[in-house]
Length: 271
Image (tube, rainbow, N blue to C red; front, side):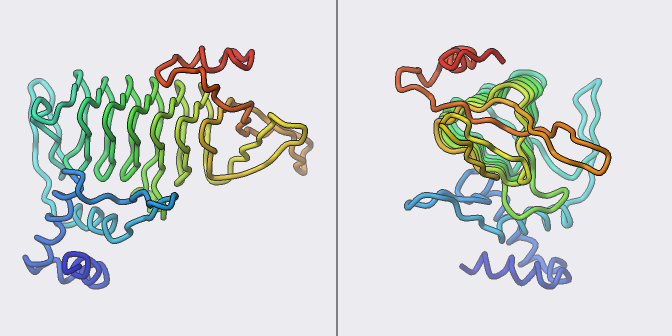
């Protein structure tokens, strides 16, 4: 509680960051986030998630107290405020060149990083794969056994500042070139087909029953989702607007490690 109070005080009065007590409180929070002992959002026992706003505030203030420095890995050179994670062997993480994860991002054991990027404040749980050119944005929460396929973009919350991080729960399969931003939550074991785009304003329409059911901001557990469109009237005429279609539920017979194509084949859909 003392650590939280110091962060809240510094957030209200940034001049306090000139005092080493408060600057060290910020550094302590980042170290705790890096080791997974603190999170920007935490699952609740009763279901749902709690956003720890003060942890996010500490991350933002960390940028303010860090000095720019040059990092070299010839022939490459970087100039930044953030150090990178290191010692992957002891973490039990496989990092394929050119995988990059910033210090302050947590990586669970048996995580695989293909050439990809994981930003500060993110939490990637055990056994998940961040595939080639996928990005995990600042403070995003990725569950156990998740597969983020090639080119997936998981949005962050720091630039621009947003309230809730993106949450991808355990066992999800996120297809190639999907984009999930603005605090959208994808519940356990859901499957997103390639090129699904989810924002807080994206209509998510369950078309698996007799009548469509519309929702926003959350994909229910075990849903199988593909890109779709609906017609919207504009002054210039009627045009198709992108949405996401829930075409059914993941079958109990579908193994959690199945390919995306296998999951979609149950519904005679090829994506």
